[in-house]
Figure (tube, rainbow, N blue to C red):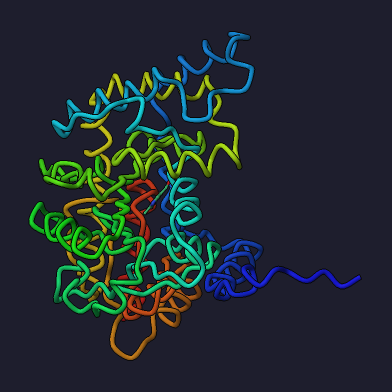
Length: 388
Ligand SMILES: *Cc1c(COP(=O)(O)O)cnc(C)c1O
């Protein structure tokens, strides 16, 4: 029997990092000491207080059974309390907050709740690949909004035709942004809310990096903007804020019908997040601030080290206000994939070519600040020798 993947799987664009992965394996096998700046996964451990709470909660048989679909009310209350403290936004924990098994899970499922086959979804390019793939899985058509340096890596909503806007159901945005490290201010979010209201589009804001910001900068929540709760949902994750990527816990907040719609899909697919993990999540959120300064200090030192090193090597890069990424321009004469291959082969440095995040990512390469200063210093030395 010939196993045929479904059309929705076949239409996923080819995996652009396959060639890099193959080269990585080959070089590792040869004993090359690779410096991997390719992966957005914090190397800093989860706070001890959170781990201690998990251990305690895991021993309680009351936590061994199926959790509730929408998440423990205590966890959702902790989310609402955190929003009040952090953004001065009030949320009803029962109707406006939903526990997620990591925010990727919620982002991947939301098109199933609101997108019919043939509907458009406005997707940033470059962008987190899940927005595009989740749209395709729901039978939707991604309409790409190019993020350009001239526009501060914000989408230019005025270039979206009335025809497309009319058929669009969802609009994905993500600030602080992966991969460009750009940030958005309140006027942008206001513009997005006005645009969404005019055309009847649901705004999905991915705020995974809202707490990874430097030099005293405090990113804005979409929910701070008047009217956002009429049209929007915001996705958050404990992954980046508390170094908990492996734990799979996140949450969505916002308009009760949108949150409820996502919840309805989830009740039919998963059976909720492990209660012990939610209890550890409550500990993380209630103690928010305990480790923030230390974590930000680590990323700030790494950011400065690599920004200076890249510039000294002749690469053009802005020093970001937020996220743990650097979005550097590829030198003239190279595509992003060619330059990533050169860095890997000649210097053993792994970066992610911008094209992997969408066509508009061409011309850039992303470096993640998720390795220690020693390795970054070594990377900077190798870059200098490369003589770009
Ligand atoms: C890391 C990341 C996420 C999701 O992380 P989870 O671990 O699934 O919560 C979502 N969006 C962006 C842009 C990310 O970089």
